[in-house]
Image 1 (cartoon, rainbow, N blue to C red):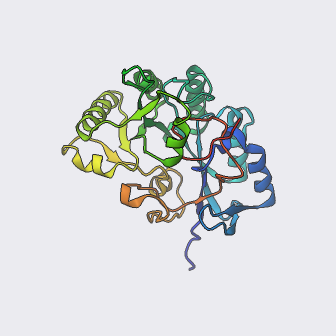
Image 2: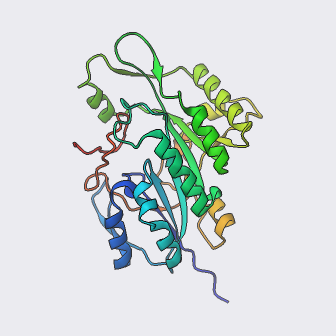
Image 3: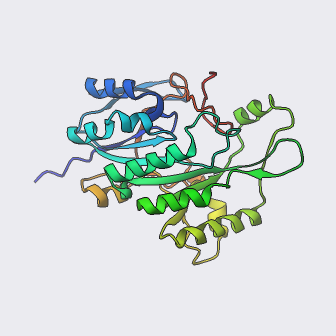
Length: 292
């Protein structure tokens, strides 16, 4: 007997917000049966199969699943034979940091809809990144104000995973905030980071939810035994096999930040930093936000 075909997982996408802004393009490529993907580093173009006999699961990343839900995209894909998994970033309402995401109440309702339609086990809540900042008055602020409210809503939906990390320092972020006199991002010391994530994990444990750290190896290694905090695999092929069955590679994705603690399994990302800029215009974004 021949071995079962190992299908691929498609990430849609770490590089931009496809569910919010590029669904028409996405569905056009589904109709064509393939995606043409430009490597962001060497600019080489590769062809990625998009048919159900080759693709097991689409992992969608977004801060606004409204267009996806309103267009019944998920149901259409399921009827075609694809499996779905969702990484939904829902942060506190801080317009300075995320000026163009929907109101928090609307995003919480989207979280409920995703879980109701596709199952809560197929949904990970990302509270990401944790940001500390000052607007020039000496007062240290952060984006944690609504964490408990969002956690309560996620728990009611049956979500079991909360993924977080602290904001990373990128040159493009420094260039962006250089245009904002008085504003600066601040970076808590390791002890403060440990204390914060332990507090978050304790609160989530009361709601039967686990905390996972994304690309925070040093922080994770410094935590006490028994903290319950684990390293994240935001594309968890091993878990998706348990969820849906099938045959997926469970190898680490060597193209990700493995040395920083990324636990993502092998997938193919179909987004583009250059031709698909994100319109949320988040201040801490490592990608390429649209100018308008």
